[in-house]
Image (cartoon, rainbow, N blue to C red; front, side, top):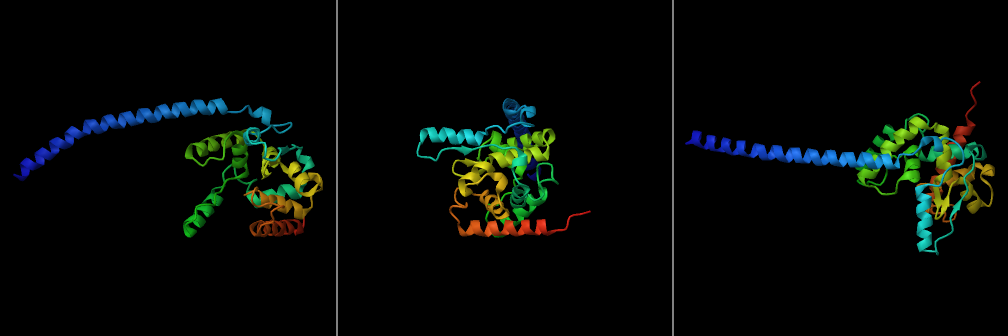
Length: 254
């Protein structure tokens, strides 16, 4: 009796194997088709990096998106954006952004695995998945070509484009682009526009404290900025300022 039942079950399992195989083949074909479509899409948005390697920083997709929203809603503030050369931005401002956003910017190749690990450990420990580990390079790519969406496909495109940018552009140029396109408030893009809006001065005359404040604005520029002066903003600005003081108090190597 047991032998008969065993043979019957075995026949059933043999019958289901062709079906599972067919489903696997169909799934593989669908995935390959999606991959081909995605590769085609990436090829359509793949930039000519030589156009971004030098010269005036181009208008990003984020800035274009803001202009489009303002056409539909004229009550939004006017766009404030004035790209400037890297030598117009003081070193304290450059370092403030690196301290605040990506302390290992010059060490990694587009992705900070250590920061990602630290962020994940924090999120799991506090059961609050709000901290990421996007580098300046990744944020630059997102601003230039993509959107603020958090879907996995967008992150995948961000990864591919970041690799391309890190290969084609220098770290200094990537930082220059970021400093000129990062959002510092509603309709305010770039360090020069932010300096003029918040302090009434040009970027090259920013003090260390003002640089720390602008850097502290970056994670959430609409809510936390030099005008709103929220508690969270003040804490972050003081933290960035302390790091800058330590950085500039170190004796220079001979």
